[in-house]
Length: 244
Figure (tube, rainbow, N blue to C red):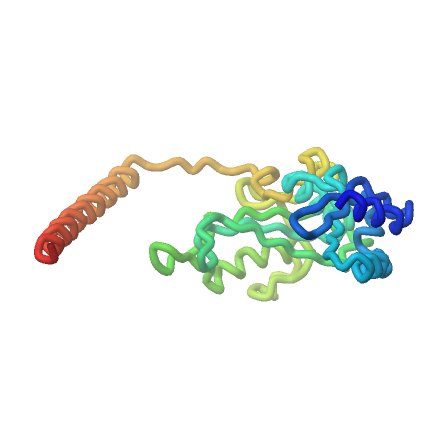
């Protein structure tokens, strides 16, 4: 096997920057420090495979890879610095099937280059704007969509469709709802595109009446579910006794 690896290393040009060659079972793995060779080896590997009759896989050297967090940051950095990220909106939870957590919507606009928005990104916190469909799903009504869209139109200095007679309305940051962040601010936050980093959240608090009412509802629901669980448990025990 060592002879095969040596033969392969002789057949691969120096520009391939092969850092290691190892066997994984019956297959051979080549590690390269050359991004170009990893992406396009111009048939060199195919020719070697035809000669030695073994499968060869080319992988980037571990030193070229990065962890997921760093990779995501690099992607965000490239997007932000490209100047096409225009609006970021955080949604309420349960807005999408099988996704219970809050999501983030990214809106890109190549046309913002050269405009007053070129070095700015609008962040909108819409986590509290929703209408429940059932216990596990929420949605935006047309009016709620219009409310969010109007913020974007004001930011872009476009007239509101719903209130065309008002013409263009000047955008203003709203505490807890929206904020325009500069590229410098985003760089200082390590290219985070989480609206919570920029939109100051308003602490609305919970009234004693609402809290007490909600606790009674939850307690009642818990009691009902507990009773149903006990009934189901007894039914299973009785059914099992009849079987055995």
